[in-house]
Length: 284
Image (cartoon, rainbow, N blue to C red; front, side, top):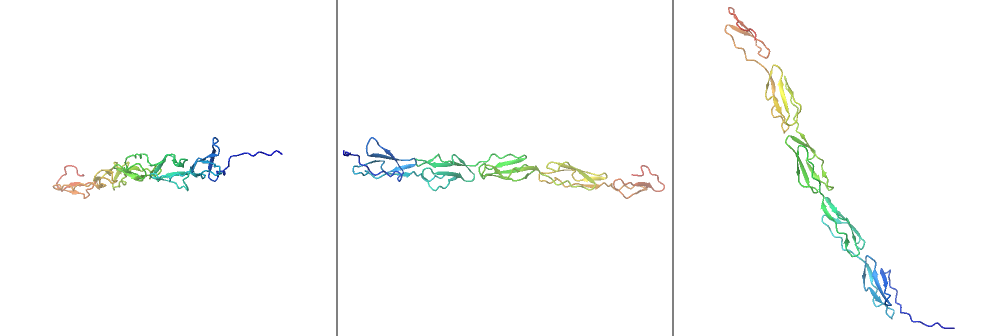
């Protein structure tokens, strides 16, 4: 029988622990027995990247290891904070949020990339701003600021009273809290009725008037026209109607007067003593 001739083959070293060390093998075909190692994305090589298999069937160095890329602690931002994450390795994601009254500008989420850095750029927290508050009819607006928790104060012009909240607060959502007030004319109390007289008025609001007059046989004591003031009071006391009364009649010589009622509408009668004749009207 023909015997098989022996051959010489290159020495073979131990298989690299690719899975155990998360390695990627790149053989160098131009040089026998030499291998090159690399890592998957997100991993970094620790150790020698190139090993040579020696005639002794041992590698000239220990196998490298691929370690997961780590990022630094997520940075803090003014008026905001990063969410908690269990680890900060390649692919980890962090969500940022802002304090009440601040609005997030930019990407809320950042990711740990293969270079060990966070991307994209960090977001910013900017103060929430409310719009310019509305004017109110017959009112005055005092704006203290437009940012979160700033206030606006409403007052009314003279002769008007505020109905609703005088102060509004800029809320965390950028809207004014408290509801818009209104200014309504100051109202005076109803005009008081007077005996033997009457009043006429069409409105009881600031600047309006009430006019008093008396019945026949009475005269008005006091101010006939009252004006409603900005304080809600009338500018004078209510007048009164007093009965008209004449002064006692003058006596006449050689005659006398009959009648003791001197009120409006009453009559007196003049007459003469015997032997005298009345000249002029006897009844007044």
